[in-house]
Length: 574
Ligand SMILES: Cc1cc2nc3c(=O)[nH]c(=O)nc-3n(C[C@H](O)[C@H](O)[C@H](O)COP(=O)(O)OP(=O)(O)OC[C@H]3O[C@@H](n4cnc5c(N)ncnc54)[C@H](O)[C@@H]3O)c2cc1C
Ligand SMILES: NC(=O)c1ccc[n+]([C@@H]2O[C@H](COP(=O)([O-])OP(=O)(O)OC[C@H]3O[C@@H](n4cnc5c(N)ncnc54)[C@H](OP(=O)(O)O)[C@@H]3O)[C@@H](O)[C@H]2O)c1
Image (cartoon, rainbow, N blue to C red; front, side, top):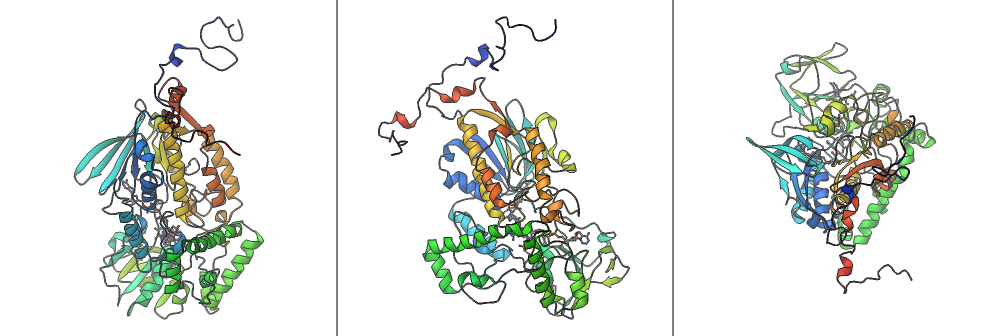
């Protein structure tokens, strides 16, 4: 006989999609609806801005989380801070205005300048951590080595190294705050190990070493190199040789003092004592100022549309500014001003960078270091330069792969599948990795504005999932493979319209010129914020801990109405 058998009264009822089985007849749970069955064990990896903001949400912003969650943060290093703990090179500074690169729950009123230095940011993070007790759940010197999903128990088995000890813990939810620019590496240069002089990397700078009276090769001119070069050039009796493979836009689009009605032409003006006092005493004034900067950044996003009039105009203005600073030196202008669209690589204010190349002790070599000997760098064009120091500002491992072995559902190894392409669900989750959420995963909002906002919105999003998982008796949630595939396919279309798909080489494209955009979000920060405000459960496979998903309805009462003193008519509109 062809076609489905006729319904004989046993098994599924055809047509209405429901299943008749003894399994769904579960016992009444005599507790108010949404009463959690258990406290969730949540493990977060990393105590940089991501881990700390998340800690604040669980400890303070959402007090009900105390009842729902038991939290631990494993941090490989011996202190908080992440990026701002370890990047201690001369000139390290944030290129997002200090007042908006701040903990959303406790912005600082008395920044000294428009842009903060790295050490100032670290200090602020340390003070805020103490003030809010954010290190309560942090286990320092605990490096996560492995996380393996246990299908049966729906838990992550987390293996951690603490000194000589290895411990194993289990988590219902695993959260990555491993950062996107944390793992640095030496550049791959022939003979690199033969060099016997001093070697350092921007992310592991040796501040004990005396760089004065030295000839220093600086390799790389991304945001880090741009900050390092002028500082080394300022030291007594140094010769700085900047090896560059391609130029970079160094540009300040406006004078920041104008935002407060000032006329200081500096790219990084100081705040007056009166301004600091006002921000501290009048929280509205501080908020308005912060909003003004954020509005400016959000409204400027249209500039990043490839080939747009606004991008062309901004590019023209940047070129003009750079030419003026370079005193119209034709050789320097040709070498240091890019041909590709403004914004393709992160634009940096780079105070004093271009000016350095007008100094007699700074030499520009538009060629990579092809080889190193015991005491010299040999450029790709064959020239040899004897140097005492090689300073690598050569960037990070931007593969997005987890810094630990991560095995999800069906034995899927995340690092292995991301070797080809790091594909995420909206930057916050991954295929085959149940109950796993990421801060700043692949395609996060990193290309414009303050990353801190994206971290904050991610934290709120994860809290929504935690609340749902805990109170609706959910076993696991994982993005549907199709939802991820379709997201990648569509967002790649959007990316084509933005400047980062132009012909520059950048870490947004995993240090390629024409690869997929794997770091930046496809569109504006505001689109992403709105998308994150809902869970979009239709994009997820959800498994429940009970055969009947409605067990969370309990005895049919809400806990609110069990106390008659509560306002039980709060929903009346008029
Ligand atoms: C030099 C530099 C300048 C920057 N400037 C800006 C800027 O101007 N504006 C901007 O928006 N962004 C900037 N960034 C990006 C910056 O990384 C983010 O803004 C932000 O600090 C990221 O915070 P995070 O907590 O996500 O990651 P991180 O600060 O990188 O912290 C990650 C933490 O995870 C820990 N960790 C990693 N793996 C493990 C493991 N296996 N086990 C345990 N712990 C682990 C690390 O030890 C680290 O403490 C800059 C980055 C660099 C490197
Ligand atoms: N607040 C700030 O101002 C600030 C400061 C530092 C960092 N950051 C953040 O961190 C990101 C990374 O910045 P970064 O400067 O550390 O790294 P980056 O932008 O990746 O720049 C790395 C530089 O090193 C060069 N390079 C890499 N390997 C090389 C090799 N083998 N030989 C020669 N040159 C080599 C690259 O040249 P090619 O381009 O030719 O590959 C590039 O110029 C930034 O985009 C920004 O988001 C921000």
